[in-house]
Image (cartoon, rainbow, N blue to C red; front, side, top):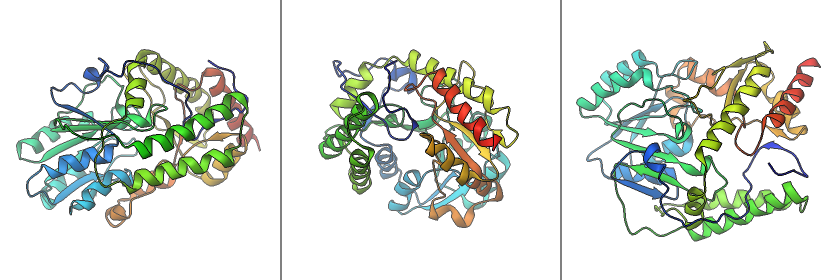
Length: 359
């Protein structure tokens, strides 16, 4: 692992150049085994493509804890979107989901696992009953993309590749094959420039955060403005071709378990998933902190560690949000444990957390 000049854990990705042949990597078949697979620029465009192909769909159920970019394609397609309940361990509340299905009669149910762990497997049998009733099941596999546990059967599977890697774009859609899409050159150029400037800042000490962070913000503005689907970029394809997913999985698992072993010593923190097994590839490390979350997050940021509140509740779900859903949004905080870092970094993060609770 390269030595850093400006050490930090979290925040935006950084990257140098990737070199590969740009071909479809073989491991994509393991992630999404399908004869029909489309690689796209963004995951939200994948959901939009699926909704365009569902006849007369107008009602959808989505998890109570989710991202605005998941809800947005449904709203734009004219759907009435309602949240279904989860448990505090982020598994699907099957009884609550069943009641909603019976009274709301959805055309679509969207599911997604959380943080690399199996939080949807408990609902596999019930979801199959829903499919037999003609309800379309879409799985967003973004956060469990590289995990190897058994999945529920879904009609369509989507996922955002760019959330796992230092790439400007990238998503997949399984169940449909789409041709003729162009790359989003403006987005790719903006994101690459920001990531490469940050790379020089981290490893060579060049530049300032005030210079490159606005460029990340501009790239996100470009992404949010898009209304059409685009193909995955050649830059991202090259990154995928050169990716060692076994090394990625091992690094994330080791980092996760190293940090949770230290966090478990603090009663002020409640770990949602205390340990990652061999079938889990962690996306982030989530925990509940019931008091002083904002102060804790600010303290960590002053020490160059950036735990994130990944989502605020989408406005469309507020009215139907149950108490458990509100608890999740109000108390969750997530640490980065990805392949940029090693166990030494995690121990340093834990030292900083120790110092906070010793105050």
